[in-house]
Amino acid sequence: MKLAVLLSVVAVCHTATVKHERRFPDDFIFGCATAAYQVEGAWNEDGKGENIWDYLTHTNPTVIRDQSNGDVAADSYHHVERDVEMMRELGLDAYRFSLSWSRILPTGFANEVNQAGINYYNNLINEMLKYNIQPIVTMYHWDLPQRLQELGGFINPLIADWYEDYAKVVFDNFGDRVKLWITFNEPREICYEGYGATGLAPILNATGVGTYICAKNLAIAHAKAYHLYNNEYKARQGGECGITISVNWFGPLTDSEEDEFAAELRRQATWGLYAEPIFSAEGGFPKELAARVAEKSAEQGFPWSRMPEFTDEEKKFVRGTSDFFGVNHYTAFLVSATKHIQQHAVPSLLDDIGVGSYVPPEWMKSASSWLTLAPNSIYNALTHLASKYNNPVFYITENGWSNDPTASLEDDDRVTYYRAALESVLNTLDAGVNLKGYMTWSLMDNFEWLKGYTERFGLYEVDFSSPERTRTPRKSAFVYKEILRTRTIDNSYEPSSLIMTIDEGH
Ligand code: GBE
Image 1 (tube, protein in one colour):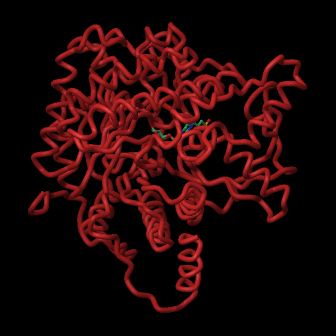
Image 2 (image 1 turned 60 degrees about the horizontal axis):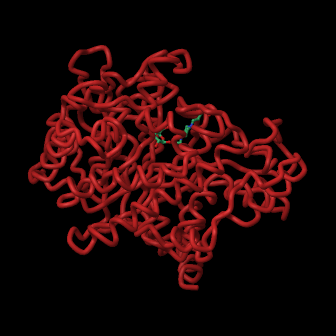
Image 3 (image 1 turned 135 degrees about the horizontal axis):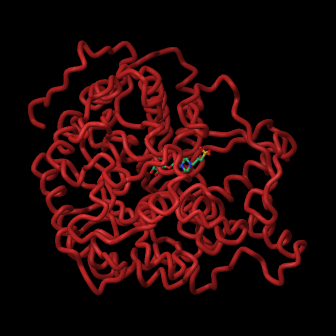
């Protein structure tokens, strides 16, 4: 296999001592990402409808660590010019943002299109294009219209039709200028955290059941939007349509066969569940996981497996429906068949796989409990995906680091993280992986879901106590800018001041 050959060549080169400068290709796309609910604010302005995050934060505020919400957030709805100015300051090639479904379709359905919502995104896109910044648009980043949730959300198979109707409105209005579409951000977080646990809205906690049903319905919804684009827009608009899946790395704790299998089960349960139906040659859910859930379901007295099946027709409909593989990557975990095992609800996805996971104490810690700096984890995740799925086009659509709201603007931990991550990107490119671009999470501080404003991911700090939501670049912003400008990583680079300017040509 071509990739395997390339991988062994790289292994040899890395052991050699010649230290020549490694460059990012000129056409490699560098950007930053955000999401609608996390930055926009204006939660009920100009005709926007209520979504599940409006509903959750307003009716159940104590589930948010600081009892905050995204009512105003970074107020990006009123700061298009400043947001684009930051992109120019950094010299970004692209900016990834998401569309708020209920801002565009206040009822959730396509009976009523909110022109003010369309205007907001038109202004943003047009302002970016003035400066040659490419829009990468996520069509769904977790903010389902509340009415659709009341009708079952992703547990109702009709979600696929509702989503297709929404997709049509989106392609009709923005497809003349948007050439990179992401149908869904992170199905695992939507389905597992939202339906199978209590990590994200709608915190349904239907453990062991909700995740799997959602995963199937979401795959069909994604495929419907893909086929719609492919059949009715692509020839005219010439863009690409894909999906973004969160792929952290799960390696075995030891090299025993049991630990390797445990890691494989964990990978299947964490991202294979969403990737396999779309990117594998056979389609459908991952086999070992499906067998395990069927077995557990039978033991537990269920007359059917808690994991639904795809019919042959559905498999065919879903398979191959992504022009690229969008990867959100943050960290890694080591997986064991016998150690670090915890008790979980029965039934639940974690009980179904029954493996332990471990994070070595020497991996640098962020402000988020789940996020450490794991060595070369981008390389580990992407080379694995590339050989598993025949090296499709990849974009890293998120990668980032959190710190405390009180941390100084000199965010050396984030600088360390980004330099390590981008070294890992270079290793990945050297290995022959078809990786075309990289986006940081995030351009600016924003509403971090259940963690509210207590964890900050921005290259720009946002002052949430100022009415203007003043944005100030952190040291990491200058370092990222320098990497983009030079296309290389210089570990000794120090910004001479934290005063930002726009370079010529941006
Ligand atoms: C991405 O998710 C999201 O796309 C983005 O919206 C988000 O802001 C960004 O990452 C940073 O989180 O009790 O702390 O372990 C963990 C990445 C909740 C995956 C955090 C939800 C990581 C999924 C709960 N996780 N996130 S706990």
